[in-house]
Amino acid sequence: MSRESISDEIFFNRAGLDRPRTERVVSDALDGADDGELFLEYRQSEGFSFDDGRLKSASFDTSQGFGLRAVSGETTAFAHAGELGEDALKRAADSVRAVRRGHGGSVAEGPSQTNRSLYVADNPLDGTPFDAKVSLLAEIDAYARRKEPRVRQVMASLLGEWQVVQIIRADGSRASDVRPLVRLNVSVMVGAGERQETGSHGVGGRAAYDAFLAPERWQAQVDEALRQALVNLESVATPAGEMPVVLGPGWPGILLHEAIGHGLEGDFNRKKTSAFSGLLGERVASPGVTVVDDGTIDDRRGSLTVDDEGTPTGRTVLIEDGILRGYLQDRMNARLMGMEPTGNGRRQSFAHAPMPRMTNTFMLDGADEPAEIIGRVAKGIYAKNFSGGQVDITSGKFVFSAAEAYLIEDGKTTAPLKGASLIGNGPDVLTRVAAIGNDFALDTGIGTCGKAGQGVPVGVGLPTLLVDPITVGGTDA
Image (cartoon, rainbow, N blue to C red):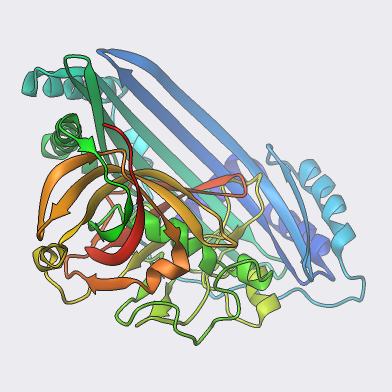
């Protein structure tokens, strides 16, 4: 079945909504508003957690509901309900009418539609039996313990989701999407004497479980988590101070996402609270730095056929060769800024209003060999993996903790480091990029972004990158 057929089956056959009457309610509720939509959602999700040799938890949840939004100028009226019924919809319509201008204007036209398909519409929760999922997590535990006698604890989780959405606008135009999402995570603790260290790795995307549960796939996640843990078991104290830092490819792009990407979202720039506000067309980064947000990559965790306002996602060049070219836009902020929507209006669920959010955000390849980049550094840090961080959007200041890092001495990586943190300012870091590798990689499909209390799946990416210098925070081993 097509995604349109699936969404019609769920919302107008199973839930019992009448499509013509629903469209009339939406049209009447939005009459006189600048914009708005009805967002219908049906979601199934499940999670399995295996910890230290036993199944710790197994959960399954089904939810459905709608969010109705009317926008007038900068004002938004939003009502939602966890039921799909005409009475609830009419009550919501009564609530959002208060925002209408009252001058009899017409609501903005809906976005153009797309027939593309970036991922399968199949429900991953239906394709793999319960026992097989639990057995897989038990196999992961046993495999890690067989491979390394220093393993003290193994934690593994398997998450799956199937989301069906339909967006209905005042003119009766509709957009539908069916979104599978799965994720496998492995965390391993190893010990020697009284010292214990951990390593973790995961994989995921918009696909069925089968894409990630083949032995070679899940074993690779265990192997990588175990490798990180054993490296950290040998780690030493991190030297503190300003020094060159080399970022590894792939997941370290989370620094780009947090320290720079949020500052390029339209709402912050419209309100002039971003460090990048008012800088379109100006140099904000070193030559060679090109940053892109692309929601159209097949099967990726951050990809969407259409965003949560019904706009097809796209490939948006944010920074080109160091020059700021654009912002990430939802419909409201684009209209108020005189720009075009970029397909980045996203929401966590039917109970949340959309806002500008990233999809898959990354820096493009350069021309330098990764080994040559490290070879340039007399003394510095190689940050291969990150565990977390925080950023202030207004100032761009950030702090990130490295899950795996190494000392660079005389152009070579040497001792692994414990507790290294990077401290800096996102816009400033962009101007300190001294070399860009030719080994671009996306993350393995594990990212979740938080903003204003809403979490959505995202992707990040980066080639090997030399930033000279960054403040490095040290810690005792």
